[in-house]
Length: 221
Image (cartoon, rainbow, N blue to C red):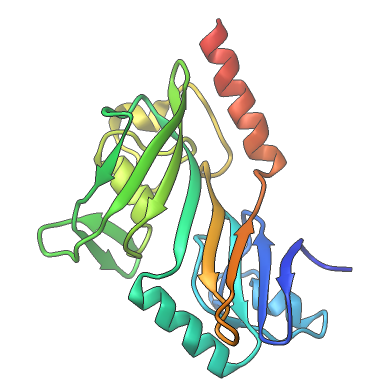
């Protein structure tokens, strides 16, 4: 039995829906198994291509061999992989669509906005506004550590459920979540063997659908 849903599978590429709480890559000190380790128990050898934070769910791209991994990672470095995320952030972003571009300094235990950091760009679009939060479509234009989480927190609109980067009012938001409200929604890339475009989408999981419903209920009160 598969440990999580598969979105695409062939002899070179595997794409799965990573659940929240599961590691993207093995970490001996984390005390839990990762996606590659769980799949290895099913007899599937895969190699990580990119990462999602442990709390983040959604589309995760994996390679079945070293050549495929190298080719896919080249696409990530070239910025040709399109990554769209769903997020529920505190407050309301103004303007309703735009770009966050704060430099991010990556550190062993996290990341922070710093003039010494590397350029980082996150495009956002508001999908809905609620009483205490807004539903966002977010696109990574660069791939820094914890980028979306750091950018939104720095802008004063931390993601609901954010415990690592939220400060001040965001840390006591009335809307509660057991995990950060961020989901890797859609990913588009070229298949490294034949060049055909892979367009992959992971629907929102039940916990985020329930969270969005609660946010909408707050608006109606």
